Image (cartoon, rainbow, N blue to C red):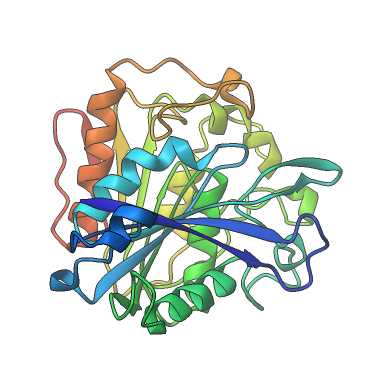
Amino acid sequence: MIRALFRAVTLPGAIAPYNVVHLKIYYPAAPLNSDAERMNGIIPADRALAPMPVVIFFNGINISIESYHWLALKLARAGFVTVLYMHIAETLPGVIGLTPGIDLSKVRPDTYGSGPTCPAIQPILDELATLNADQNSPLFSALDLNDVILGGHSGGGTVALQNGQFFDQVRAVFAYAGHTMASTMLGFAPGTVLNIADKPTLLMHGDRDGVILASVSRYGLECHEHDPVRRTFAEAFPCPNHYPVYDALICGANHFAIAYPHDATVGRSFLDMEMTRPGRHIRSEIASLVLAFLRRKTLRSGQYLEVRAR
């Protein structure tokens, strides 16, 4: 049985009403069949699996967490407590939307690397620590907070990649359609790829990604031959790197292949290309890649999958 609980945390320094983050925490549960469970619906975590690693997953800009519900369920069934969250705030100056939360003051040539670019991570970790220590919490003593994984999609994938370096408890990072090419609007030279932590990392992307293709001008690139994800794989990591890094290209997948169901009334899905294979097959491949990576299995190429490792 997979259950979820909700929590809310505030972001230090943020201005109300955009200073609140709402969490949904998925976990494997073990019913006690008690009257309390029947009344409040709260079921404790399966302590036979404890302590369980934690995945914090960052949504793409203007993509609701419901689009990642399917992935959170698969991760929780595999024994990974998974956190999704909703944060409404500025996505661009003067533009309000759903965001993983990015502190643009930390993403400039003179500030990048000086601290986390996502102010939500530490409050989330603090709330998880509180739940883990509270005897009345369904997650009491169930979490391994020294084994945290950051994952994300699109802009949320970028957040995951940028922030692994700032938290010692982060053991691995994965991203779908995320990269670390820097916008020239933030003062970076054209084609700049931001460095990221030397930690186990899985980069995933589709060969039908119209959103990344339509966005290369943000990075001062005039030629669509540049692939920001592959540039990240080639240039963002220390050389030599001490941990496995994978670049997985999924044939037939587009930018929003990981988001299901996808709400096309917001965001930039109108820029995307059509997928050339069934979405359920592609989502199954994404989940299999992520779980193989988190279980530290070797990733292998297949008929619809090209994997590079370093």
